[in-house]
Length: 500
Image (cartoon, rainbow, N blue to C red; front, side):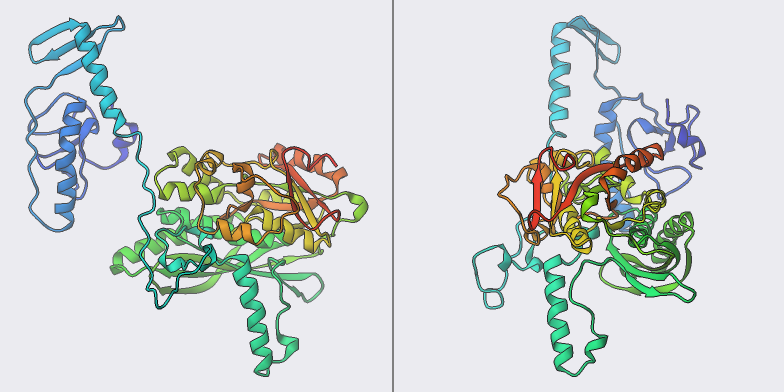
């Protein structure tokens, strides 16, 4: 039977409900739509549904798509009159049917298995490892030892989303150097930022009390679906406001579009904005303006302003604070796996769904405790956890590797050695309190996240109740570790962080 959505597609269908196509595999009603295989029906020369016809139509379909795009004359498909059909009969034999000839034998079953397995083997290894990186010019980049000498401009493949952001160490070092230069050039020291990257947002006093909270976030084109890209970018930008225990109010869009024909660019921008508006509206945020421009690649971001009535309460030493996370980890490695064609489609779908899911509900529940929070994004779980510890005046973090929730497929891809572009720099930015084995779960701590969950520091006595409330509301809620002054840096254990 044809898929149900065809009846509402607006395409011309045959009497059985399949897409009616002409000899060039072109829809009879929409010349820019092509179809082949079981979903299509040749209007002038019908054929029964068979894998043979689908396979033989493939090269003609591919060639005609290219010819149509370049304005060339299309190639006619001339299917064979008959085809061999092999049907297993569940008794070690198969029916072999071709035209009027029918036989039932073990040899037909053997032939069917051989054909099927040979065909499926072609689809078991579809990976696309990064191509060899271009060689840098020796005079511009002398050979040096170590990964730090590698210029990313010469890398074969770079990740997108928050996997494409500047590393923690690079940003921190650049900010420190910039402050020195500005001070030396006479800038007022009182107007220079405090060096450090532990804060997610700018906190400003508001008239009448409370605070205004401002943040800005931009991501690259992590998905080819512009509507979903807009959703994810908006949700990602809103999370910094939620992490500051604030309520988002207004947003300004910052969108860079790749050059394209005017009508195509307009449609692309329309879909981005539609997805963004849906996510902003869900959070009660009004889009009040923004800026668009053309660049080499599409990026989408938002400057968001929120309000809050109370500052977060840092946990006390006697609170024995633990860490609660509200989304699974692994967007970076799953999307890197997708770029290399080694990630299952369901894994990618799950990762995109997670990225598009708002942190608003979790933030509302956590607000009752007014905890210190951060959102887990490009610097990875470990780095964000240490930043959170610093804001809470703790020197170290313990994370239970077995407790950290992972997206479907993330551990498998990490086990295969798949890493996002920012992964190694994230790992280098984290001080380890013990020697570790680079297992998949340990590697997940450094995976850059796009639109990740909230990470909250809660008193141990309140954490279990909060986890229950999060889960009752359909959110992820997991205690993954604790803050400590027993050491400096990250200590990762397999199953001890939340026990005390």
